[in-house]
Amino acid sequence: MIHLRGITKRFGNYPALHGIDLDVAPGEFIALLGPSGSGKTTLLRIIAGLEFQDSGSVLLGGEDVSSTPVADRHVGFVFQHYALFRHMTVADNVAFGLSVRRGKARPSKAARHARAEELLRLVQLEGLGSRYPGQLSGGQRQRVALARALAIEPRLLLLDEPFGALDAKVRKDLRRWLRDLHKQMGLTSIFVTHDQEEALELADRVVVMNQGRIEQIGAPDAVYMNPETPFVSHFVGETNRIPGAGGEIHFRPHEITLAPDGAEAVLVDNVFRKGAVWRVEGLLQGGGQFVELDLTAQQAAPGLGETIRFNARRSRIFNADGDQKKGVQP
Amino acid sequence: MSLHPTSEAPVTRAVLIGIALLFLGFFLLLPLLAVFSEALKMGLGPFLDAIHTPDALAAIRLTLVIAAIAVPLNVVFGLAASWAITKFQFPGKALLITLIDLPFSVSPVVSGLIFVLLFGANGLFGAWLAQHDLKIIFAVPGIVLATVFITFPFVARELIPLMMEQGKDDEEAAISLGASGWQTFWHVTLPNIRWGLLYGVLLCNARAMGEFGAVSVVSGHIRGETNTMPLHVEILYNEYDFVGAFAVASLLALLALVTLVAKTVLEWRFGLHAGARH
Ligand SMILES: Nc1ncnc2c1ncn2[C@@H]1O[C@H](COP(=O)(O)OP(=O)(O)OP(=O)(O)O)[C@@H](O)[C@H]1O
Ligand SMILES: [Mg+2]
Image (cartoon, rainbow over all chains, first blue to last red; front, side, top):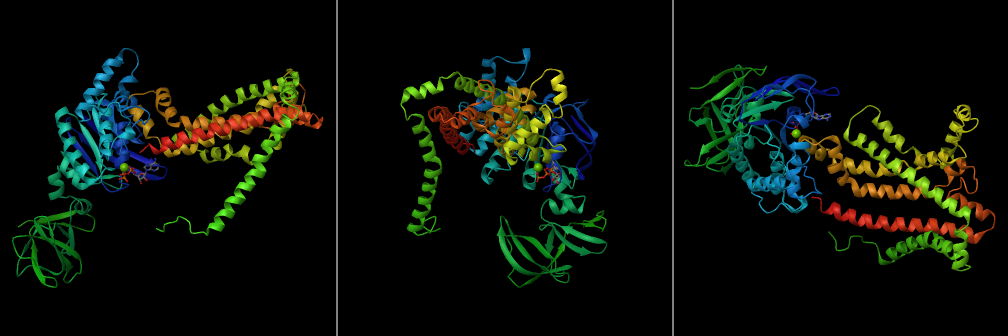
């Protein structure tokens, strides 16, 4: 469906993307995940044709669109701040892509209206067509923006932090709803987020970006369980990093077992309930690194000032170059 | 937070408000009243007669013509400049922004002189123009040029901050939906900036009709031909025709009042609009 080959982009002297390769299959739901400034938006805009790469090529459905302007790429783009046309009604917003078509391709007013109604029903905003964007809540506006993008029957849906401006509860509802919509309509979608929870929950595959490079591409489970670089290990999920033989040892808070003769010892200075587990925080004896451990809540919580010993059940070791040496997986 | 937004003593407040009102009354209201009372001193008859002289009518006509040329030109220029500045990156952008303000920072008389230096009989293009029998200085084209120059910041300066604030998301959304550049401008950009644009046009128009300095340098003061209303007022005044001078001046003052009212209405609508935005 989408093939990106060696995409690079500079803004003045600043290299925003260094040689991005990415392939997306039809029907996939892809998350671009990365910290602020990692180039996610830039990449998404290059796929859309809102920005052009300095080198490399963009193929959509087998067609090289590297220098095709956005208007001819037939992709739906949803902006973080909705970008709804505030002087138009919701229905006119949704029908905009149809009403700007020329000649025979332009549906009649009645047909456009019917299509807008249909899409508003799809995004569960039936009956709000005659309102103005200013009269809607943030979540409703984002759904209008989505309906507007879908009206042109795009071959690809691109969303830049679609839930970034919404509060946590609305985000969560919309997330699940978007996932369902994607499946139901058989869309191919790419969305940008810097919220790892969102990426892991929604996407078929997660593309982790850092400083204009792709660090890892994989299913959410694989990215979480087997991070390939120290960056991914640190950025996705919570990770403890302690020095060890041959490099830095990375392990998740839950990848440990308590043992009286454990290799590591922690002086507990904070304990609280985190959902189904006890989260224990403290400093590692010897190195002084801050570590976080999860203990099943069936057992008694360790007391403050107590020293507990544990072994990392599962861990990853990265040497100074960031290469992974081997996984200690007993 | 304290109960009162400002904690000055009531006396201080009264004094400050008093000074502001006195100042306004003395420098703005009083002259305005003086203009109208002088114009109508002999009654309505002489007032209308003064406006009905061929020279006065010619001046009014010329002023309207000048504004009718200068304002549309500056609307097009202002839109183009603010579009370029806010939606594109290009070398020389900072220079363009600075240049737009030039007419505000240069004395109008100097602006007029620039055109004399360029197009006057001894000017840079003077000989060439004479050869081709073209007259710019001391003729209507010179007045148009000077007026366009003087008034070109108004629309652009109104639109640039507005368009900067609005960003280019709306335009990008429109083109991603398949709209052409023209459709995007017409259906998305223009509606977004219409109140600001109208406001800029009003200010531009008021200045185009009222400009004295630059126009005075290039006009040549030919009665019935190259006199605009402000120039005509000066001539009548210098000839001790006070009723005539103030009658024409009162028309200009009326224009200012209409502009002020329209501006207030717009600001009110504008405020309403901005408030309803998000
Ligand atoms: N138009 C531009 N001009 C100059 N630099 C830019 C431009 N757009 C992006 N950049 C720079 O390119 C880098 C990548 O930006 P981008 O917007 O793609 O990051 P992002 O991953 O989307 O970040 P965020 O999560 O903050 O949105 C940033 O350092 C940014 O400053
Ligand atoms: Mg971004």
